[in-house]
Length: 457
Figure 1 (cartoon, rainbow, N blue to C red):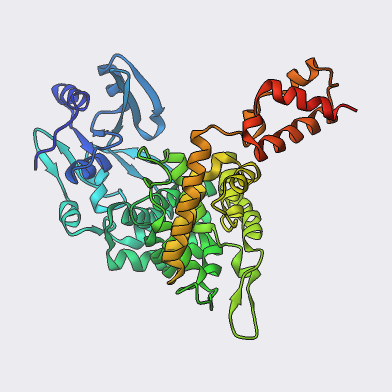
Figure 2 (figure 1 turned 90 degrees about the vertical axis):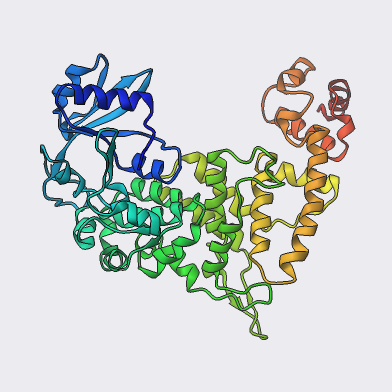
């Protein structure tokens, strides 16, 4: 099989080979190229030692020289070049205690996680595939290199990576690999929250977030996201639902798309899409603690949105998420049951209360949530939501004021008009804001300054 190497990668490999060293593109870039995908990064493996690599290229960076990695800069782009290596013992279930260099490509490849990531390529020898990775690519299988239990015992994060690759590539997980993941799931406790969060979010924003259910069945989510297990154990005996809380939430996650009528033709940014998928998975996380059953046997979950927002903050902080994600996802969960009305004044009030910036994401979350309901809720709900969206678009197109930043006057204007700085100033600004929310046409500086005279004490 022929792979088209970028000119910089070809230059690096050619340079190393011209000086008597072996060199290949290796790992995920080879996998993605064979799948017809654009590799995000091109990694190179070589028999040359780090100091030998550094001697051949004008600009290099010692990014991981203790592990044999030197970054070669060409055309302002960095390419990691790593010496063939053999890992020592993995005593902490994540990192080898030592790394030693080797002259053998085979030794380097056999320490890698999955067969599809253990292929190397150069234009001289073509594809080097010692573990039948190409066959697994063709069959759509995630399989560990060698003995699965050994690979997962070396680095427990590989367990979660198996499910992540399964979701990203829409591949099944080979039975021995799946059994080893189930047996060693508890070892994920050794992995840092940051690494777990990174793999979990990659899985969630993939084309197949439903693969999280396989992770649940293998006991993986019990370790990394026990709240999801509680959701899967919480039934919803209600005519609006067809599944337990966990399955409903996972279905909602699958229905939450990147490009929709609510997000516009350009779709969401990667960060926004991550917020959306996290919120979809966790939007009902408050239900297990809020479940009650009436005399007819119907379940109710009153107050679950507010409780869920608090729970989301705890979960994301435990996973070491950034503050923007914690804030946005918890707000989406808090407001996902808000009773929207397709009326301009009511929607302007809602935009003030919720924050207009949240609405495109919130509408998509609501649409996905409704799609994961039973009939007739599944078909009747989106019709109402579509009417609300049209009203929202009208408000945005007319640039009507729904927040202080859109108000035609600010604190400086009021101080110039004779108001003293302090609490009173804030109260007057809010009264003026409430006025223009009710009557948008009054959002003019002269009109508001004149109105403010009535509020002077």
